[in-house]
Image (cartoon, helix red, strand yellow):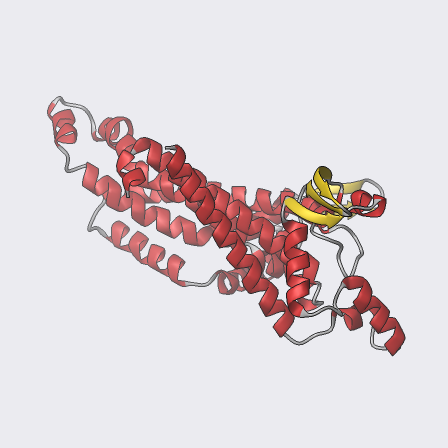
Length: 351
């Protein structure tokens, strides 16, 4: 089991390194001058050169890459000075000359636009994205299991066919398209009846009461984000329950005179939920990453909105920090699922 976990961790580290490398190279190939965007179009050449030097943009690309990678690694090498120790907050493990091997939390630098620490920006934005992902997953899981049960029990009827068609449509339609339609329909055309807004975040500022919790703003983005996992869970639940209902223990339960409701809820459902539980655990991490465009459409101030805004202004540290954070969450979630698989089924470890 230990070797199995170590292999998964090593694989996760390689994936994370690949993500950092690809995004870093793409960002530096795309047009746009962060120094110019930071200072504005009227900045003189001397000021721009000073900003580029301060941001490290005057260095060759490979030097910038090595320095950034050194910053995000917990185990790093720096020239030890009081200024560096204060800046990076590291603990010295070993020194030779002026160099030091140090341990620290990943240093994600400062935003080019707001000059705030990227860690602080992500910490402020993540709770909104987490709440949105949890709400979307709860919506998708509860309705998906319910629709799957109904579809399996009423198999090959018009109810079953309708739910299957809706599930296929839900998987096929991109989130950004469904988000635009849902925002326009329920937040604009039907707003007098729904009472919902096209745009809004979890908290809105009131000049008299300060930040006010606005849970109604969560409904439309959670609905949009939950459509695709809802469709998938419905199909999985339907197929799994139909298979379980053909098993011998289910026929035995019916032979004992138990009602269909009791057989399904107390006997068949428990066995049919295994693939659904797996899908929910995997989709939750995917929702954190997939919330980018949904947050932007609904002006939901989470990681997605922060990242898209940073892309528009070529704010490299914020983009890289957000991608690194989401990738880490996604990888750790998948490693945890793999470990659970390996614990439940030793054949997974062998494979």
